[in-house]
Length: 166
Image 1 (cartoon, rainbow, N blue to C red):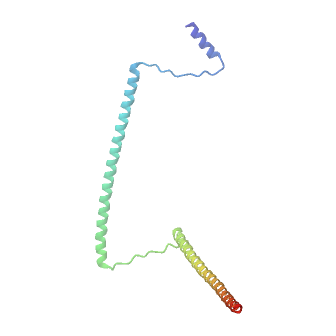
Image 2: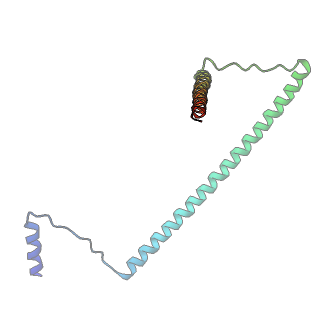
């Protein structure tokens, strides 16, 4: 005992930090009791959670049922009002304003303009390509005609040269 007291005194008086380690006191009943207590607490939490969830779902169902009942009553009242109005006046067509002043309308207008510009650009590009193809075709036809003409004149001159040799 005296030896342990000296060692603790030495450790406490030293300036170096001493790492403390946790060594649990193991009594066989403690671990089992602790586990059972944790298990019981977990089960209670789960039961409470499920009970709360069930209560919340029930309240939501009641609210939805009440809301649907009110909505149905409003529809019936509106339907009865519409029947009275329908007898007294003609059905008017609803006016749907253009969305030019809104941000959505501006973006829609910008998108239309962009698509129109893109369509025009594609059309011009197509025309330019067709024109370029026609120019190249004419050029090729001229070259072929020149070659045919040159070949024809060579053959005639060769034929004349052959006849002279004979």
